[in-house]
Image (tube, rainbow, N blue to C red; front, side, top):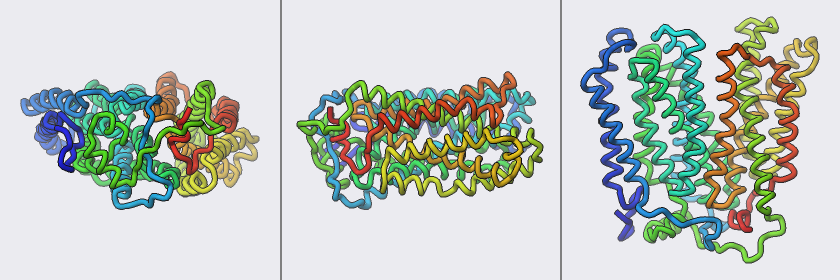
Length: 515
């Protein structure tokens, strides 16, 4: 079902299959609600209860609906795009942001909030899940392990799909899987929760890198930098706020299972707003969807922009691109170990130092308040000063925090010093993740941009997987031990970004990707 006469279809030629699959998924999720309603009358417990007929039918509909919707979303003919293509579309640098830019930013920010919200919910469901299933802490720790593994796989998978089939298609496929895994809250056995949580992780892992990639391709160059950082930061903050707010409102009344079900209405809302998610214009041109392309050019101020005949002097060679990829991956890995290793275990480490749980939480809260403006400051420096040096600076601040963590115990026992060290770590890590993926998306050509951003996003989850694997064995890193292990890799990653990174602020993507 192509686009003719000015009308557009968000999925192209197979739209009826797509919407039929979405309808089947929705009906399948709704058929799980009667069993949840029955469980609500019995203290929100489903453990050990057999699946009723409606729940079984719902699972069948979801199993049918997901591949049907995926088939409907994929184009009949795969585009032949690649780095060799001669023409791309980009808004002139003088293009102002209009209402379609604003609508796209709002919808994609909502997508990031939904994307972050699901993994962030893990911490809130674990206590209730452990109590209902009567399982040990080591066993319930499998849930965040499979979820983080899923997000790592999803980052690679959706980035690859975005390069092959298009950015909007990848976002829609991720959303379809996200909606279908809302039934995780109705699973009567822990093993089923693990399966659904892994699939949920796959769906959640892919939206972040693809959204960065798409925004980089439709925003005017002079607005691209601050938009990428701000949208990403607001999505991360909004996702955690949404998860904690839902836990505060829903869990006391409806139990931990209700927290998984919020993926159903939020995912459907994103599908309903999909008309505001544009496709990369070159994908439309290569598939002959001329009406949609013309409409996009009008709405976003896009114009054909041929590759420069002569590459700029600072254009990287293939070897330099590999070095930049190594630098970005190392930065992402260091960030993941600081975030999922050192910061995750800080409360335990502080209590081991003699602080009470209340005082330890207070120290972390004070440090977090100092880090709150990080996203806005990162966006400001990234857009107004330098993209490359903002990233180097945030990694350098993390490095300074790691050095501070190795101060003598007598000095670290003074609360103002301890708060300053933790604040540097939190500010540095928040700033790094806020600018790392935007910088990655700007540095790669269209044909590999999704995969490169997915690779870096997946690397930023790897530390979480490693820490969760080590946790059942009794591994709990201390502040000093983790700092010692991460100090050199963090310094090396900052040096590699400084040496191999390029300045992207305000520059045309066409010039950046020219070879």
